[in-house]
Amino acid sequence: MIYACCRFLHLVLYTTEIAWSHAMEKKTLPDKPNAHQRIYLIGRLRKAVKWASLFQELCSTKGDSRTSLEAEVCFYCVIILIYMAMCLLMRALEFSH
Image (cartoon, rainbow, N blue to C red; front, side, top):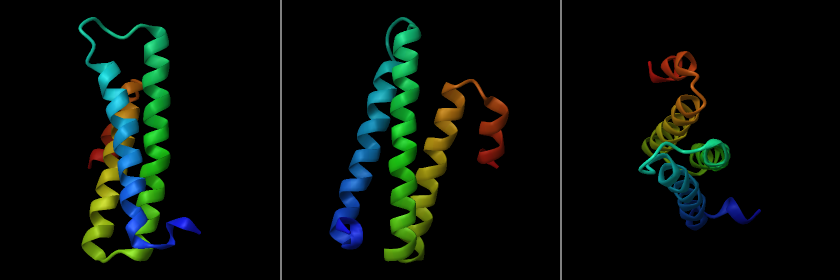
């Protein structure tokens, strides 16, 4: 598997950040995002969740305890953002505690 080497962890992290940044770009438009942009935003956040989940899994197997904890924080931050974008504030508050 290509992700077996620690060097490739950066690729997974960068892919997560790219998906997240595209979503945040749509969120910060001068006027509120329309329906099509909102669907795109949620899709990009779902992609960020997928990559953050993979990053967390890889860091828990390949990294030390601190790296694993930071990857877990990254994953839960993206989860909270997608729940907030989908207006599921109660679910987002469950993850924030």
